[in-house]
Length: 329
Ligand SMILES: *Cc1c(COP(=O)(O)O)cnc(C)c1O
Ligand code: SF4
Image (cartoon, rainbow, N blue to C red; front, side, top):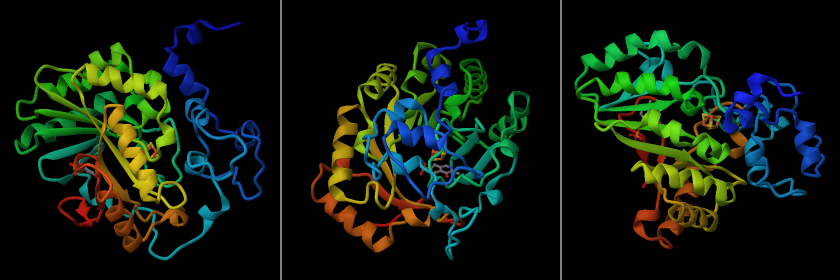
């Protein structure tokens, strides 16, 4: 019997409830067995079925599987890889707000993600401590109000689109009231991993006449893009939202110019332009995905030689004390 609460849930909330968190379930669904999988650990497996459905059964090196499957390699302690590689604690004037770069602030709107990406630089970040909850946003709003150089507010997380439509509408209303803020940017992986999240009600919650809206999705491999993703991006584009994509350069997943070329071209046909290609942040537990700078530059140079200029993402790395993300070329 379906309970009333379940009946009331939107399709995206059902997808979120049904995420795969059991390694054996995932592997048996894909007809795989793996010995060095880690089941118990602080950043556990978490992946929505929509994302699993794009993995190739029987392929232990599937580029989507590798992004989510916990392995023993994560326990390797590698020099230079730390828990807070970006030293974000330093740029955190009020809980929930990061002010690192001129003109823009980042709000950690939601404390969780629908998917756990193994390379995530926030895997050790205390989302809970940095998620003030609805009543707690006032100090952040006051901070933005008193600094007229801030023209852009970025919703990040976790994944900010895990917040309810009502919660987002409340926060966007408050931000729209601040006269010097002209742009709302949302960094989210949900259009990729639970495309149902994008619907009319959500769009109504984030669109305001005075705020230009930019959605930056996060997609690393062309196989992540299927028709359901296209539908979600089409809805955002139809609402006049600018669509950009950021990727992380990951060894064994997308560290080749042919994959990145296919990704840029497919994104373009789906309505999103490539924005950043990030060197992975040196976070403990993800050293096996690291692509060194020399290799990254070579891949990028091959990419730039093959693509229209507007399809080439900027190759950047993040540095704790820098005034912006640093372009490598
Ligand atoms: C990446 C980032 C931004 C946005 O930087 P852009 O170069 O404008 O995309 C803002 N704040 C923080 C803390 C960031 O990490
Ligand atoms: S969606 Fe983004 S923030 Fe969430 S785990 Fe993946 S990389 Fe990290």
